[in-house]
Length: 440
Image (cartoon, rainbow, N blue to C red; front, side, top):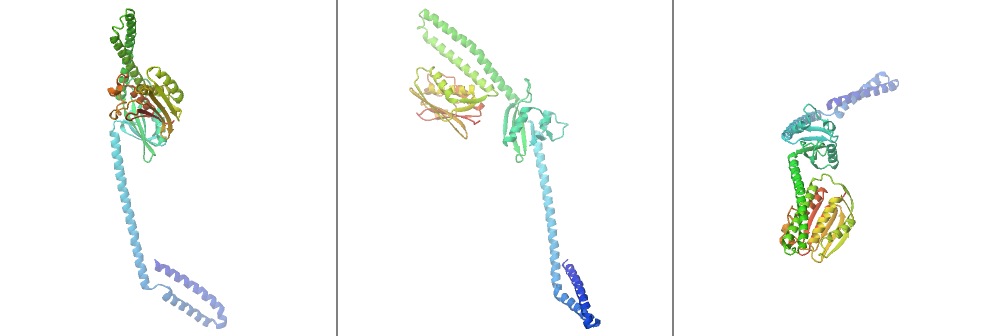
């Protein structure tokens, strides 16, 4: 290749000398004559060619080295081609492994009993397993398909859109595509989370119909049983009051005061128990809560005065430290939470008692604490006090009426608000319950 280039250079140089010599011949032939000028012209060309051949052109050894270098250069291109071929083979192997992994995942998802689908950011279903296909009858459909074409359920579409906005895992419990009051409708727990660097989203529909039916039966039983039992208890309590009046007329009340007092106390306790069961059932069955901005200070002033009337023997001093005076919550449920916590604080306070209620707000939410100066809760019991019907040891709950459901109701209400409740109790320094509501 290089030798050819040099020959081209030599050819061009020769043409240049011929043109130069011709011009010189025309210019000098009148002075030296045509014959002498021709000899000079030919000699100059010959000397120039000899000079180029021996000094301008590369030697044979140099051309040999250049040719060998060309051969090595050819060998390097072969190596590059071989490397590219190896890369192509590795890429094909990776593609086969990728297709095999996709096949494994597809078989795995198809084997699931729960419906599963994958959607892209345009709400197009790009994959659906067999359960999802059977649920919506997509046997003759070719994916991808728009979600709107598969289901027009607005709540499901909003759930997917909100999941894509948050770019995280989203959940929804007891969802049904059937909006009608059908006893045979199916309920799902929905879960959506991003895959493929958030470009696609996987949606899992877990069938919880049996669990929903069991919960519904339990809730209906508690509500109906509580309602049915509360009525005869109320009548029994009323008749007991009539009996007391008759005994008082006959001056026999003092003689039968002990059994009558026991009947009164236990009937009242049963009424309170069933009232709390109804409240708990109402909280559990409440699907939607209506949140609003609540003036904490105004509510506390009313509740503390109202609750103290029920405990005339108690001398309680209330202290308010309200750095945050508003909370965004369901008014009735929040009122029930405060009634339970303040009433517990009054019951278990020392005499004289001191109850402090504080509020503050930070990045994690709005925090509300209720503290008293009563006996502390043993550390081994702290993890159980939110259980249903659980009451502390006899030294703390002796002669104090209660159903053991108050804190369980508070816990369920806080869960409805996506909030938290914590308890802190020190030896001989009282107990503090702290509520945390998420910021709106």
